[in-house]
Length: 473
Image (tube, rainbow, N blue to C red; front, side, top):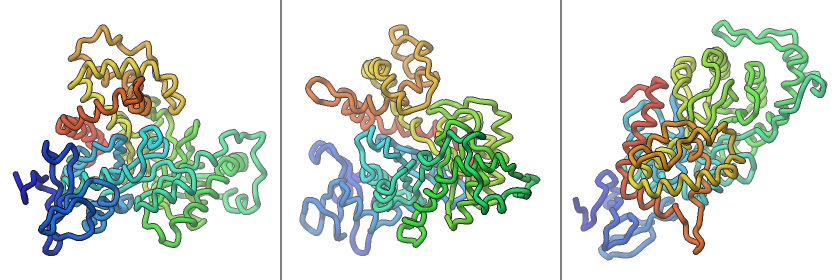
């Protein structure tokens, strides 16, 4: 279909006053990149085509203009909705598939969700991440609210960076301030206010759950979390208390080696609440292991017992539980959905990259074989960034597999984790001439097979939502 002489994305056509703006598809004549056509709509920068028409590239300046003119293309606060779901897109190409998913399910997406580590490993910026989603939302005419998460941020500089761009959610990673080496021998003496507040008392948090602190437990908890609570309160007061930035606040205490006990969870939530910190979600460290890109590893019955009381604590203080590293945790999704009563935030990221690589294995087996062999050589370097228990010896030998069998590697945990954690090295690998060895070929492949990738995401992320008990709408 042609609109004003251009091959347009039909759902992107928007009338603004007497003018119109839409996204046009790239053609051999126009070049390799899609572009914006605006007629009678001021603000866009690009080539003047006459008759009030502007051909504008998909750059940051035009993305900012788009967000101002069409508010649905800008992120908003979604953590206050009952069900929110993060779908971190490391590649900047998954949003059309994610949009199709959340048009179907009664949950609110956080489309833009990246950590600083992920930005560094992919050579992207928060501007890139946000703009990619804005253009995809524009393309698909997606009018439902969606969020943008500055994920696992640890510093004033990084929090301010994300908020200044309009990110609607900050996940504050408190791990650098959690003292994991505290034990009975080195736990600090209790300040008097903590003793009076917590000792010799029972805390009825509802639903038959009563908590009680011993002095030894309280001393350790104060030693472990005292500094982290101060850090979270300071960041809240600095950026969010006075309303300068309209963003939701998530507290992450999950990046530790040991699970968060109910007493620890209650203490952190109580102290933050008493300090006037308003947060929408908290991510405790659950029992078992939430390793990247594979199902839950641990005792399911123990997890069900613990998620139950963690959910009660969250309801008591009126915030949502946040489940990090939620990619592919299929065995625990039913209990998460049940015990939270369908009120939760779940984060996924790497699984979207894995589905992209599964598409590569289907479409170009030769290229995938090259990448897989490189990933094996780069694995030890990549594992410095992640806690995984990958056993490379369990990955089938590539030479033993026929091309149609390659996608099956993504159904095997060890090969999934191999590709999952080496993404940055794969995308940044250069040949002797300084050109990207895999990145440009992969992006060309994904562009040419956008619908294949979209349908793969719909199936895979849809399975997550189905098991969490999210209804279709």
